[in-house]
Amino acid sequence: MTLTADSVPHLPRHVRFRFDAARNCHVLLAPEMVIMPDAIAVAILDAVDGIASVGAIADTLAARYEAPREAVLADCIEMLNDLARKGMIAS
Image 1: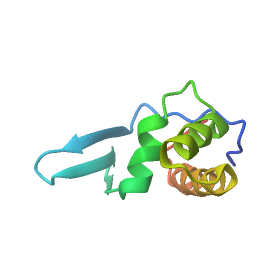
Image 2 (image 1 turned 90 degrees about the horizontal axis):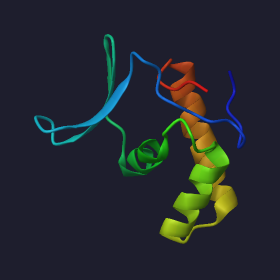
Image 3 (image 1 turned 180 degrees about the horizontal axis):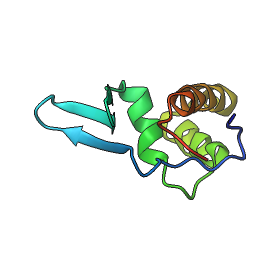
Image 4 (image 1 turned 60 degrees about the horizontal axis):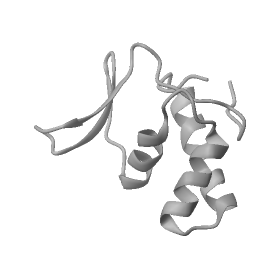
């Protein structure tokens, strides 16, 4: 699966994204896997709701951070595709 600007990403049932108080950071949890995303990844993952497309997520983040939309879109697609290859994001 390859996500594009039109894809609508969501977390599969076996994946959880939450703030871990013990680690004092956000974590993406799946069976036998823990990923501690950086601040940019957290901003993207916070917007993944199963309703918004990757393009809409990029629009929101580009406006919030006053960044070029195309650069934000490229970063979103790259990160979400990396997580999709690991089974942490579905579309």
